[in-house]
Length: 502
Image (cartoon, rainbow, N blue to C red):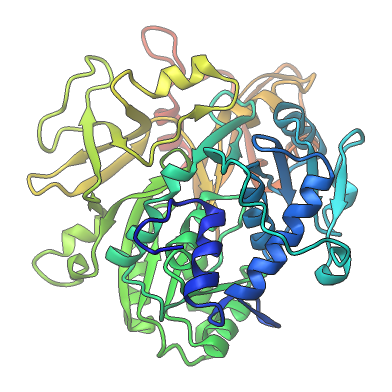
């Protein structure tokens, strides 16, 4: 397959490098390494297994598992069949998981042994283990290239502002920009060694992973986010590139003080997905002694849309104010700020809603045309729901999150979802959820509640933890008699944030 004519898909990346660099290392996980040639054989066998179980182009195949080379290989195998990989967070509660699976209706579920007991009845499940070769030994390593590659590659879920599951549909065309992004902004090449830390059910996992993998580089898959694990992998594989959310950066800095490691191989660390405080960023620049790249993007944009280049990181210098920026739009995007009421472009330095026009924008939400129409305009702009402004030089600054999303430890928490659960409690009249600062997680969830009769804080938290993933649940509750309202009767969450320390 010629490098200049190949059409991008997750599967075609494997096909390309099995021809160009068959013996180059493709994936490692701390215990073993697999080359592009070996990965091609492995993914073809998994693809034949899928076909034998009735998976066809367009079928949904769900994966609920921890990060591993097998998880990554399964995503590629699904692409070889032309099916759609549905990423599932293994931390979801049984209530959330059932709703998500009912929505996706997968033909087959791939799960690791830890996740298998969580799967509700009624779904066809395959439990994969480390002994992958033995599990697929009976299948031929035949690449089903004759199948239509399929346009939709990924269906990634977030519960969203409605509190209900929404599957973001990401195409191969959306993802086709990731290798270019890797070369031109993450400064990767085929010689790079990239540490993949984010969960593979996130765009920050598979999307960021393709920035290096799509350039034939060596991808190291971290099995967990423990700082000792990450520092060990950096030393073991001589990592050159990584992407970390601010919480992980803080964990690494704290662990490094106790257990120094050789980090001299690091060339560039990207950060994003949540605001980073000045102290953490400045300390990271000093301790890690490498270049830093700030990025902004989301699932709906299949990854990064802006970048704050290493040259724009100038702590203590005349341009130090740019450290509060998320950078400029990448050349193949248009990023503008619009007045959310008039829908007219804002003036320079005027706060408004961030809109993005790009070939990376999702095609929509799975089976939710009305919701899709709310966020994608007829001329292709994606309305992010985030507030910010552009300075005279095109640098984007974040102001707030219009959607009120909370980011706790790099995980997105949508207040509507948590509020919906709390409001089902028989002693709750109304609950409002806000994010408040947390030293370890960046933000944590706080519930402000009007109760119909007395209820213990611990009881309400326990009620939520029975129904939601624990990172979404309140860590504190305050009981009030009323909420601050505007003239139209709308609850002023901003006032609650001010009052309760956010």
